[in-house]
Amino acid sequence: MEDRMQQQLQAPPDCTTVMAMIVRRLGWRLPGDSGIVPFYHLTVSQATQLQGGSTTEERLELLTAFVREALGVSTDSPTPPYLATNLQHFQATLTRLWTAVHWENKNKETLWRLVVDGIPLPGNTHLSRVPIKPCECGSYGGDTDQPYSPRMHHFWECPIAKAVREQIDRHLRLLSPATIEGGITRQQLWLVQAPTGCEQAPWDVIAMAALSSMEYGRYCLRAATREQRQQGASTHGRQQQPQTRTAEQGPRQRAITDFFNRLGGFTQEEDEAANTHPSIYTTQPTLDNAVQTTASPLDQAQARTVADFWTRLHSFAALGIPKYGWDRVGPHHPILAIVGAQLRCDSPMEITDRGSERAEQGP
Image (tube, rainbow, N blue to C red; front, side, top):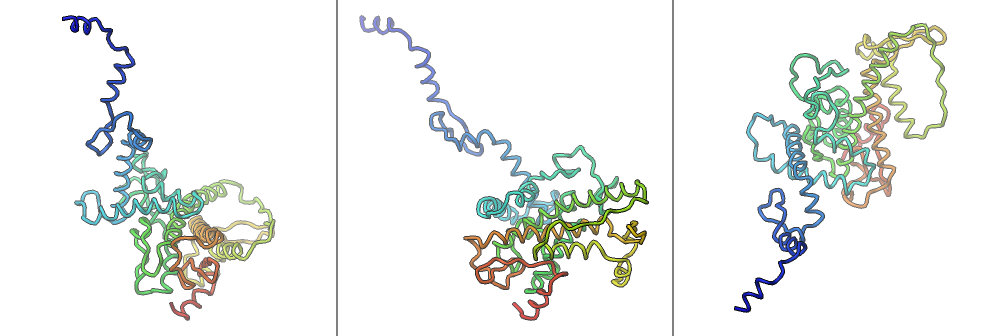
């Protein structure tokens, strides 16, 4: 009897004790996991996973849509069995590119944003209310329905993108003309899967440089078109100032500059001799009142895009031979090759005879 009275007279536990008892029984349920993680055992990694749970799911959906588009699988068709394999492989590829490839992040950003539809193209998923604007190339956009997405056009079908793809195809055909017949595929470029005749480590760099240059070329085309419109609206009698060279160019930069000048500065006689279309050129006055022909905005943008592509590759080659993944890259590897103790980069085939030399030597 006395024991019962003593138990009743005992003071109730304080608030801190009660809260500690409750907290021990509370926890978090992680996304995709049926178990509960108690508060006291929650790690920073698990907390980050909880905070970005919805973002992770949305990113996975966008990543899946990107892989489907790269493989040419429409959203209306059933999911093929090989989609999951390519998706898993591409997720591992993104991790490898971001951590193992030691290159400036600006060369990786385009691919990283492209996979989540993060490039600010009118008509993208995150800009669904913005109507698709016509591309300055003249082959995409307008009021009619488009056969493919803005991402597909600007990074595959646009003449700007095709100019970069052509450079890659022409170098790969030198060593394996049969296996690369028809050119590289969208799956190989977008999902960074090395084609036959090219090792994976160099292809990582080539693919990222190609996509980054395509994005750069998109801005170049807009700038060249805008400049042409401004020149058309201004007084045609304005004289141009003579160009002066401020610094001596190295051999690599001279090669790039020469390539740009040759693509962007054909005369009308040379153009007609090459059986092209002279109507794409416009005339501008010079200091001596002579008529000088200049390339169209599309041709100028293509030349700048190709020059930017090779400049990025040359900048990577200047960093030296990477430590990992380049053991099987020999002196005859296309585009990026290891010659002796140096990492060498090819140049555009229009301004070098190395392509013909390689064709004569064979693989």
